[in-house]
Structure formats: C-alpha cells, structure tokens
Amino acid sequence: MKKILILTNWKLNGTKKKIKKLIKKYKNIIDKIKNIKIIIAPPLIYLDYTKKKINKINIKLAAQNIDLHLSGAYTGETSIMMLKDIGIKYVIIGHSERRIYHNEKNNIVEKKFNLVNNNGLIPILCIGENYAEYQNNQTKKICIKQIKFILKKTKTKLLKKLIIAYEPIWAIGTNKSPEPREIQKISKYIKSYIYKKHKELYNKTIIQYGGSVNINNFHEIIKQPDVDGALIGNASLNGKNFISMIKQI
Ligand code: PGA
Image (cartoon, rainbow, N blue to C red; front, side, top):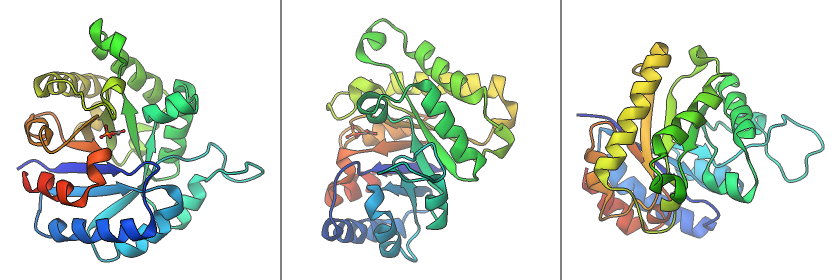
C-alpha cells in the first residue's frame, strides 16, 4: 500500500475557534488511517496555537512562507529561525499565490528553498504552468525548468525528502483541474527526470498534486501510481468534506 502525503493549505483563513473545530474533525480520522500523513499549513499567526491543538495527534505543521533573512529590520516578516524555534518542520515554497501577489520569481523561490533545506527543515516546492502554457503543451518543459533552477544550488544530500507539489496555476481555486491521467503523466515525467539527474533522491521524492482537489476528484487523482499525495486548499477548510475525502482512501 503506498504512503500518501496530504498537505492542507489553509491560506488566509481561520480563527482560533474554527481551527479548534477543524482539528477535532481531523482527529477523528487520523488515528484510523495508517498509510496517510497529514501536514497542516495554517496562517503563520496561528502556527503556535495549532501546534498546541494537535498535541499528541499524529499531524505535522508547515509554514506557508518565510522571509529570506534570518533576523533584523524586516518589518512584518518571519524567519526560518523563528519557525525552528517553535518546532515547525515544513515550509511551503514557491506557491503560485506568492509568485503572483508577492512577485516571487524563481531566484527568490530558489533562495527560500535552499534556506529551508540548509537549516534542516523540509521545503515543499510548488511548481506548475499557467493556462496558456498548458494549452500550448508546455507543462513538462515549465515544470522541469522550475525544478532545475531550484536544484542546481541544492545540497541534495541534506534533503530529508524532496516534496514537489505539481500545481497548475489555472487549477488553483478555480474548480478546474487536469484529468487524473494527465496528472499521472506529469508526475511520472517529473520523477523520471529527478531519478535520472539526482539518483541520490530515489526513494526520497514525493510528488503531490494540488489545484481544485475536492471530494469528487480526490480519489481518482490519488489512485494514480505516481501521485503520492495532494495539496488541498479550499476543500480542507470544510471538516466534514475533508473527512469524507480521506475516508475514500
Ligand atoms: P485549492 O488550492 O485546493 O483551493 O485549489 C490549492 C492550492 O493553492 O494549493
């Protein structure tokens, strides 16, 4: 039975009350399923609160972003040292919403990815094409270009895991997604590229799919042989739906 990694990205959503309720729902299912690992990415301000709520529950936490600096006069930012200090293990890097709304280009994504890796945390790298690129059959090219750019400066031996979330930009929050067989094709292609260029990452590579994953398409997507998990945004905010999705596994 393959292991499945689910990352729930709560983005800019939630209150303490809502988080408490969601964790209660998640808890009902987590102990019953052995082949699944869940990582939650709450808003930064609620990381510590969520950490207290998941105490003794088998759920891990991710930050949605970090700053490039370790400390100093950078108003409004959070550093990798602070995440380390409160015991966070994962950081989402290169999410398309960061790339679009915060102008994070590949060079920033690369720096953040390697900052996380060099400091002993696990980056979750988001990659993916826009709609025009999808229509022009550029998906493979775009994904490999993004991965190549990041990995050329990565100390791959330090990587505990290489987690890549394939997230077509046009599928995020739109209720549209590629066919499961297309997702499989891309996941397989990414894996074969990585295994060819970085043999040391064999058995360490996890490919997730993200972008409008919901109760209707989750199972078909997760069934694909080279898809090792899902990055779920909107659908993870509804506790009841989320549990039903996980039960499908
Ligand atoms: P969505 O978000 O599931 O709401 O489309 C996914 C993501 O942004 O990673």
